[in-house]
Length: 229
Image (tube, rainbow, N blue to C red; front, side, top):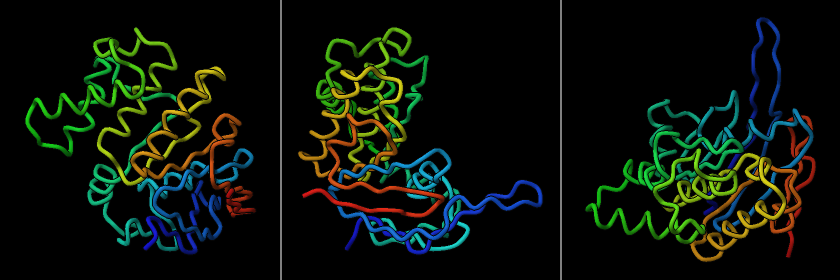
């Protein structure tokens, strides 16, 4: 059974009386453990597609299944629960909570789903922060961290709950090339060790060269879908 299935997914936005098609019939299957990049020109539908996969939006037409369960027709409350337990997000702008420390930002994500004892939660948070290279920086707030360090916190936050799938929208766009490569290598490590499925929207060669699948979107449709190896 595939981890993710999209069948004839369409998304149309309305601007007054005008209909703007963002996705024009996407058929896509993603297996557990894939490391996939989605690329294409501005306006091709990359972010819309990620929003569909991440249950942040629902299709105008078509069907989406995650882990065998239909999610395309769920209520907003049900979609929120699917996101909470199954999906991790990494954003271009980091989206950390500014008043919380690195530790607290990651802790917040896992406390939503994990009701283990305090010591067990602490061990999980400290372990993931160490794995992303932030040991010793746990008590710093976002404004006390570099851009690369903030993105590492975002990666830790996405991975600490061990989601089935991680979605990343241009995650290295605000980083220099070395830092971007370092962050991607962390995600590659998690992909190989935990079998976490990653789907990226990106133009960054530092991300794309590590992918094992390349999906090119054009005008809301899949133009090419190639696998490496």
